Length: 282
Image (cartoon, rainbow, N blue to C red; front, side):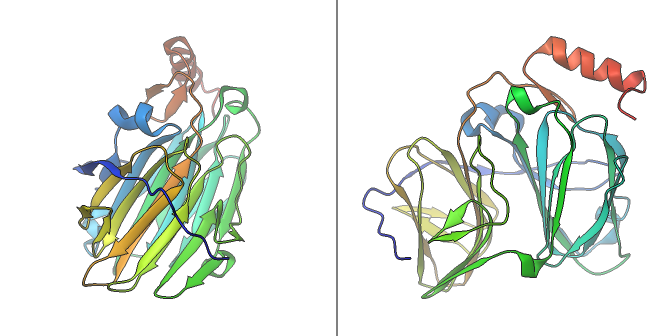
């Protein structure tokens, strides 16, 4: 399916991630931070991680609760095991995806299944509408072969969620309508993607560099795309480029966050913390 973008989105501004420490000492780069949640609603957080040093990731993420959002873990390299109190368990590795809605009473852990080599992954937090924050948990592990791929001249895209060039991803969501693409563009080639004008969207370049319009987006930068228009055009530079393109329909609901709890008010946060302390999330 060929598309032609007549009114491409521009870049509002570039964001450099900040070093973070999470879990039992894992050291990701936090690309989408809390101050950007309103602008990129319903996306709440994006962590990028890549290291050959086991000290940066070996301790993993011991048991912890979540409430009010979905987690999408995309593993480029390495092996990560998930276990949760609802009985789900699985390993994602080398191009696999874990999509999880860890609503209460679920407590889960994520632990590396290796003690050497490279670990490279992303984790996106996607907010849930208020009506769904306390629904039943949902869990899906996707192997690399389960993720559809769009093949175009000079470019390809792994369609994790949403649709691209007529190819539908495995995961679809009715309210937030997320689009999650891992885009590979050959040197000097381009990739076009249609987007609803009202969807909030961003691109994160994790290898190479690309241009959208007149603006260059270097490696390890997030480009927040301006709303409007009918899509985005990405032009690779002198080297092959890999980038994530994330877009979603805004919920336009209040956001209150405290650690792994995301609700619509401070009162609901206080209740979530009290539930955890009282053992009602276990």
